[in-house]
Image (tube, rainbow, N blue to C red; front, side):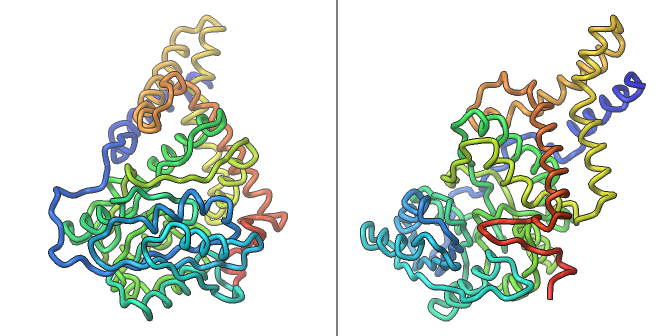
Amino acid sequence: MLTWVAGVSLPVWVWLLLAQGFFWRTDVRLPGSGAEPRAWPTVAVVVPARDEAAVLPLSLPSLLAQEYPGRAEVFLIDDGSSDGTGDAARSLAALHGGLPLTVASPGELPAGWTGKLWGVRHGIALATERTRAEYLLLTDADIAHEPDSLRALVAAAWEADLDMVSLMARLRVETGWERLIVPAFVYFFAQLYPFRRINRPGGRTAAAAGGCVLIRRSAVEAARVPESIRHAVIDDVALARAVKGGGGRIWLGLADRVHSVRPYPDLGELWRMVSRSAYAQLRHNPAVLAGTVAGLALVYLVPPLAALAGAAAGAPGLCALGAAAWAVMAATYLPMLRYYRQPLRLAPLLPFTAALYLLMTVDSAVQHYRGRGAAWKGRTYARPDASV
């Protein structure tokens, strides 16, 4: 039986290597040949924040220091923080100067909305009233930008006539657990949503990285966001689907100028980061969960098990099948490790990391049925069909 399953796993990996949008490559970066608009459009930067006072000193000054040739303003929406997030933002603006900063509160979270999207809604409305901005930069409070980040984003969107440009911020990788979990997180995301397919005009695949999204205000209005996706826990994918479904042109790639400064010092923090939305990704469907667990086991766990079992049992055919699939798997992971500047010796450990993600996904389902699913910053969100 193990030989038969290993015989299935190897062609699956060959298919993933060649036919899944070359998801494993890391060369999808911000487009642009150097052309820039003669008249730079006005941009409003919207930062939804809740209890982010600890990371704002590492991120907000980078937004205020943007070297943008046109008009740009920053709107930080403090969503009921208990740690002085709003005061911290005002103090940082007074200390560092730069782009104008407005700090506002969205008011009480109504039923049927997730907190981030409620903050985004208030930020967009406020920015539209104040600036009539042509573009909106939606960026998280833990995201730091190089000084030319906004300029590069707008130039890329203008040159390629894109309605939405999103960058997968380079996440922090410093601790041992971060090295093991974080590059794999981006690798799995790209496998599920191959960037080349997302960026193909007319293609069905749609996704974005919520930490950094530049979007035309006209596209926001046409897609009726965030109202049309107000219940979404995985808001970035929902946003991309809404914009692309409405005929908008979207683009997603890996970042060179955008970084996450949020630390995940131990496995528990990383576990919560993944498990809070994993079951929502599976549409809270037990059958999809079962299929996902079986698929992860077949694709990631069978190859090393077959290789080791074959070697131990003196079964060269079984060992060869497992080793070949394991080798292809590791080879596809190497570019992501290089992108994150991590030791390439971590590539063969991908099955272990996949096993952790499998357990996180199952735990996400368990927490959901215990009434603690999709919990973040002191809030727990219900399934969309349970919303009012």
